[in-house]
Amino acid sequence: MESASKILIPGVKALGEITIGDDVPRLQSVPRTVEYEIAPNNNILECADHVCFPNEFGEDLLEVTNLEKLLERGEKVVQLLYTYRGVSKAIPAPARGSSKADIEALNLKSLEILQPEIEKIKVVFDFHTDATNEFKACIDKIVRQGKKKVVPESLFDALIALVDVLQQMDHIKDVKGCLLNDLSRYKRSLNSVIISEQVTRSEGAALETQANLLSNFLSNVSPIDKNPLTDRYLCRTFRHALKTVPSSEEVLTRLLLHAMDRLTSESYFTPKEKHRLLRASTLLLWLADSEDSSPGSGDGFNSFKQKRVKLNIIQKFAQKHAVVPELGDIVSPLVQTLVGAPHLTAEMMISFAADSKIDTAQLLTEQRKMMVEEYGNYVTEFSCILEKKEKDVKEIAKVVLSGFHLLQQWTSGFLEVHAG
Image 1 (cartoon, one colour):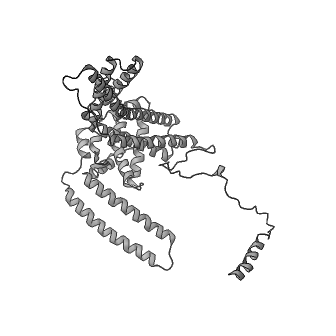
Image 2: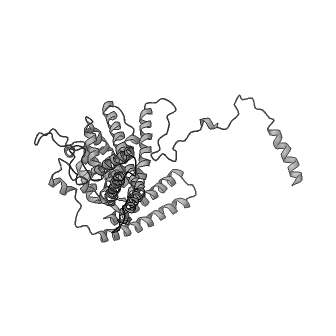
């Protein structure tokens, strides 16, 4: 080893002294100041966080970045709502014969316990407000740019994802009765604390104003006529806000067409993306439909009779995927999303409904048989390619991609059958 090192090391060292006169600059490592990321980890839609050079879609990319940050925040809000558990029932009522001091101490302690839960509700309220304003601003900008302006697909994808997040929040909010129970107990405790002057006037007034605002939010009080709405408060107020933007229905229709194009061409990779497009398609159809100014005037936007919208395709998807998984044990019946659309007739409603003759247990058995058969065929095909002496990289990549596609189909199928 020593003799070998004496021979090799000086030889290698001599190579560094050889110069080649080809005027080629020496390669250097990339400085930290000019490093970049094509797709950052925290960027779910794979769009650049910052624009380095002026380009045609620079402003659009910044809007997509803002929407992505909003979506990341929205996912956390959805999880917050889903995991929310009421605490008001665990707080005891004042015992009989309790002194005034004991009752005041209990109310103050109840207020301290409920305050973090009320802050969670406020987080939901604030996100709904911010998401509505951001979505409305994007729609208004697209309208002002005109139909000739090319809109990046990533912007449409982000807007569709935001619509779906609002819909998920709406469904969870409607089934969480503990939200209103906690707020009611909080308001009673707050009123007692204010009367007993355990907080300052200014602080009490601020807390009371916030509680009243959240009370209207959870009680589904319409901001228009102050009448209570039966359900879907977030989506209904969201639709009302969009109606203030002229020609917003045209942009919503473009979003719907984009979602349907993604579904028909199967331009999605995971079951989550597929189910998001399914849920958003019927919601966008509902959002775009606007009522007439007077009965029979026909001046409203009828999204069900637009030539660009191939209603039969949406109906086939709704019939095939009657119930779509949403989050955890929460599912989304697609036909229920259309309820309340001004131009939805009873006949149309039936055409969107699923076939009642479908047997879920039988369908699950058939899917399992089909999966076993497809798995056997795929393993055979993949093994034959690997055994070839001359391997084609493109062919291998194609087979691998088809394998991922099969995994997506199997997973989606089982999730949809169990959701039904």
